Amino acid sequence: MSEVVIKEIGGISFSLKLFPAMVGLNVIGRLEREGMAGEVIREVIVKGASRGSVAITEKSFDSLFAGKYKEMMELFAEILKYNNLFPEAEGEEGNEEGSEE
Image (tube, rainbow, N blue to C red; front, side, top):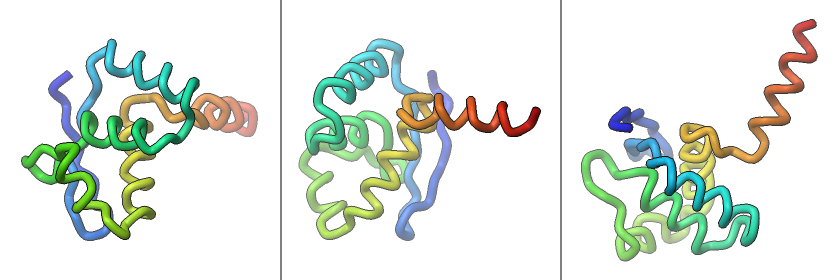
């Protein structure tokens, strides 16, 4: 659970973090119920990444991503992929396996 990966997005280095199991399950449930709602995106980013070694808080989230929606969504997708929660990942894996045969 302590494994961390660094991703550079929009010139900023973000540390991605693995979710504890229950956090991941809660994220799956919220994505299924609420979709890409702002609160869900913010929760995933706050819990799944830090800016270098500095935590992203709910307060710093707004100033960090003001006017940077492309970067915000890229970070959101990277966190979901890193935690194996990306909704498209299941279908993509199936397509890759099918194309290799």
